[in-house]
Amino acid sequence: MYQPSAEELKSVEDWFAEYDALAERGELDKLADLAVFPMNVATDVPGGHAAVRQWTREEYLETMKEAMGGGTAGLDLRSQRTPRFLTPNLVVVETRATMTVEGQEQEMHYADLLVRTEDGWAFQTMIQGGWGYDWPAARRG
Image (cartoon, rainbow, N blue to C red; front, side, top):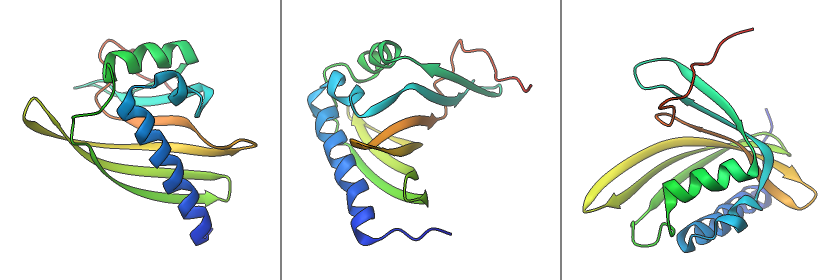
């Protein structure tokens, strides 16, 4: 089992600090610059089964514009992240987050696969339940 160094853990923390700052400001193009496309997205269809897709950069930007609007500023977003390094170049990061929307606290639980590129960390897979409205259920084979 791979044990990351303190420096490697800090590199992931720093990457998320940059991501969070960009998200807060609603800088979606710069967020997309932190990704590898096509991006894998895994979710589920409420009351159904898992659903998966691959997004292009354009699809990512369109979806994030709908989800984030002008950014996350003012949402009192608090995240607790747990990175799980598979290798020095692959890390699954589990996030538990709480945000306030219109006075109501909402909790989220999701995971991202970060991959080390020549330019540093990039996210390549997003996993979060509940996004699969109108998506076809995943099929084996």
